[in-house]
Image (tube, rainbow, N blue to C red; front, side):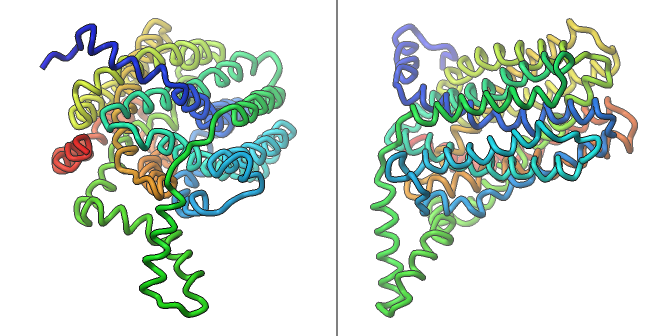
Length: 449
């Protein structure tokens, strides 16, 4: 097999990127990545400058746990119609309301000093996290619904643009935040972030709502449940509740088989856990090594963004040729090994050339593995309950970086060694890769559907 395609095949691979739905996926990806600046990198920088300890910053990040449990209310995104849904559509109405809640919370954040009122800062950040986690459910369903009729081998294009959009929404506003933090202060930075959010709300009004058979499929499921429950007065409500809460998970188990489905869920949890631990402490690490806010902006945000865009596009083309299994194996292995670059920085100190090389390597491996991972999760999600099923999978994928990674700062403090910490994050990926080999038959079957 030729790894790199010929000219005609390359044209066929590029063709999906000319679909306007790809642009919509990109814009919604930007909206999905942006909140991680608000409660992630920018907040970590603000808390570090405010004098908080590594342990405290790591524990503050525990608010990300809501991303690991958003599948609990994801059925509402599939089934409940919010005000404005008749005009915006089911997916866009949930995205819009989530963004409006975040806008209010960001404006409040700009008025609070976390060094004096950490509890209030944490509470507001929790509101942002809840709204963002809900937005993610709707955005992921938005993408899946738009491409539900596409062959599985074309999913990498949509997945790539979702990844590029996420990193654009995370990196460019992040660059703005860190490049201006020393000049105008973190409080004013958050007023700038509020303006960015207004722009993202405008994009929600511009994109098109996906058209699917979701309502019909859900209605058919309700009919089946009503037939089993009988025709008594409460059966209609009970069937609606069962279809909303139970059927998305039951359908996932039926379609994949219970044992295989459970192994898939375990793999999703394990695959990016090492990256999760690294990501939570990265800003703190850069600052302790001796890099300035401006250098962090230049390298992790701007250079990182360019690298992510380029490598994600390349990764999507290669993943089509390799297939999901080999893409996940290669991407996961490279992603784990790239963590050792951070250990090198810990030994060498604040060398900007090494910083740039590390960012390039890290973004290449992350982009490559993310395309394969998102394609995998998308292929696993059914049309009738795309929001709920993808949210379950994505929640497990986020569990490491949203919940367990809260102890990352404590672990660094306990060991007193950044080098040991980064070596550990490298080893964390091995169990997931071994499990991938066990479920590869099911993954190959998904590609053939």
